[in-house]
Length: 424
Image (cartoon, rainbow, N blue to C red; front, side):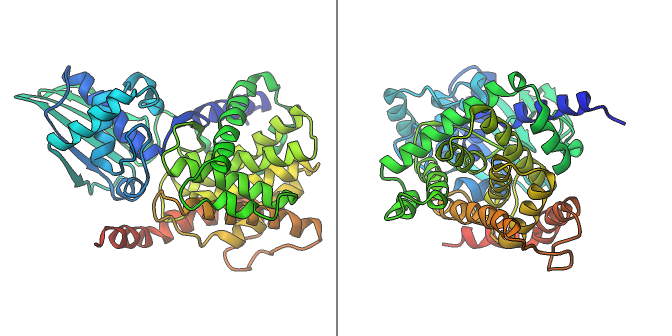
């Protein structure tokens, strides 16, 4: 049986792996990363490219604005900025240092350079392959399963790297150690120095972009809309600040976000409501950090069974995580948090993911609201019971059921969403 010390070490590794800074929506950023890497392998700027991506990548790149491109959208634009100005060594911050001159160069490159985009149908939900040519020379880079997992690199037919691209994520800490009970115990007892740098970076980045979303004019301005005439309501503030972060992120804001489970929207949703609640109620910084352990790890636990990309909206899992983190700030232990999780997933598990775009902010607001409602239900002696729809007896059985619903039950739904989004 694994000791607490070994288990805690795994939880720390999981937080470090999943809570990483990224600029812009992570799917176009992953394309830019692959293109930048292909350019480096080729040794020069390509004169043409082929980008092959899975349907879920198409879905999440189609409508979102890519930072540092002057408002461009789409797969070809993501590949272009990566090739022209990307720093592959920076991974998900690949286009964080693009200059105004390079923005103009990207637009010119996109106009004159053939960039073909094909849908890859090879069974991988997350798949990006970039082939870059300069004359007779070529380079090939493939990313599979998660955003920075390069599995193949070739140059002029020579294999420089080849890893098996399996359906299960490779190279990451095994998530099967996660449980709600274990997460609460970890939050109670972890030495904070081990997680503080990761969590404080999340606080700084995600609150900065949320504040920018409330200051600026981004997308549908869901955050501002929620907050209008409700400035004194803590429930509205939690929803509004989280939504505002997504408003900014989905609509070209160039501030970085600390992601969760590969998604900036999930990183914002899992953290910002918890931070807002802690500040409004004057919780200590230590209490906030421990609550963020809960919110982030509950989100990761739910997302593990669902997968990186799905027809199931990722904000739902993060909203549940936020509800769990707020429950912890209010002094809740395992029982309170477990009931919050079960109640919340029973409310919003039907929200679909139809790609990254402005309406994600509204879905985040609904997801946070469900997390708050799940907690409020428990505080008032109410709950959903095993047998109520997809709810099972026990939090872990319910989490497993949600994963099966999203991963297996919604597989055809995902395909139909992609077809609908591709219609003119």
